[in-house]
Each structure stands twice: as structure tokens, then as C-alpha cells.
Length: 57
Image 1 (cartoon, rainbow, N blue to C red):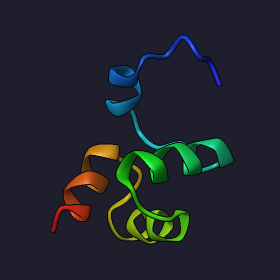
Image 2 (tube, one colour):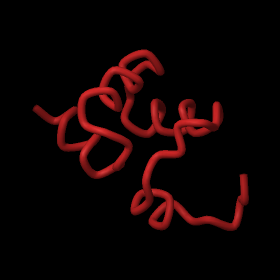
Image 3 (cartoon, helix red, strand yellow):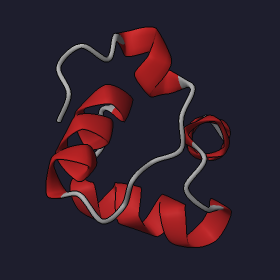
Image 4 (spheres, helix red, strand yellow):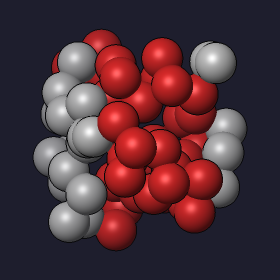
């Protein structure tokens, strides 16, 4: 992963579900397990904004 991408830029993009490190990054970011993240993605898609909204319900 390009370490020059800052947190704000990462938060504004779509989740790249084909990359294992993205699962780990976003699970940690949202303070959930990777399995919970996968479940959220299957329900609302790969937009980090939509995942966050879903998790706040």
C-alpha cells in the first residue's frame, strides 16, 4: 500500500475488498472484527461512508 496516502484520503475512498491489508485497516478503523466488516460490506457495499453509517445503527 502507498504509505503516502493520508488518513483523510483513505476515509474518502471506497474499500478495496480484494486487498487483505484493507480488511485489517478498516476493521481496526471501525473497531470491529474482519468478519463483521465483511458482513457490513455484503449488506451496504464497499463505500466506507456507507459502511460507517451502517455500523452506527
